[in-house]
Image (cartoon, rainbow, N blue to C red; front, side, top):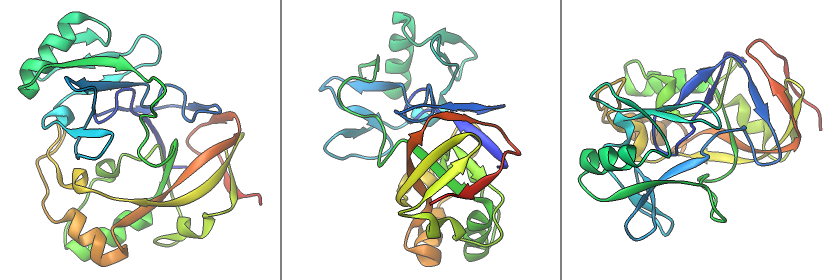
Amino acid sequence: MASLHRYPVKSLLGEECPALALDARGVVGDRAWAVRTADGGIGSGKATRRFRAVPGLLDLRAHGTGAVRVALPDGRELAVDDPALAAAVSAHVGQPVVLAPEDDVSLFDDGPVSLLGLASVRAVEAELGGPVDPARFRANVLLDLPAAYAEDAWVGRRVQVGTAVLHVTMTSARCRMVDAATADAPAQPGVLLATGRAHRAELGVIAEVVVPGRAAPGDAVRVVG
């Protein structure tokens, strides 16, 4: 494994982690909170039945598990359950929102754990004709694999990641969020189109946790069934 990442609040920037715990839900602390709009929708970069497009969320960064904190563009950092944070985020995105923990509606797009080979990102770079930050794809687990799209072969199989075992369920469909500006980088139009030309706008895979465990960079990743 090259690196590990957690996103405590859905659709905000997250954090690189020295290790991840995985339980039956997924990465512990990942997408545990969400920005909720006035109609109860889940703030996102796209609009669907569950999600509401809320521009500006990628200007914010969340970190921690349990006592999650959110960093604002003005330099303030507030607890996720602080009413002052909801007021500040509302002002930033231009509409009333609150921050709420996950309820009976999942905050994951397609599944709980996302894995992505860096060779797959390099293939998109070749199609685009320029560098692409892997962080644009918001994967939990970035992998050094020998070939682009090698992770696709894991769909339907079990993969051991550190001491955890995952069942890979599907490839990961990408949306316009991969083009968006963030607190770390300007907008990069064309990344989604390049991903579409290179690989059907799919990059990386989605998995469920079969055996809970712990993963750290450098741990082995191997197919076990």
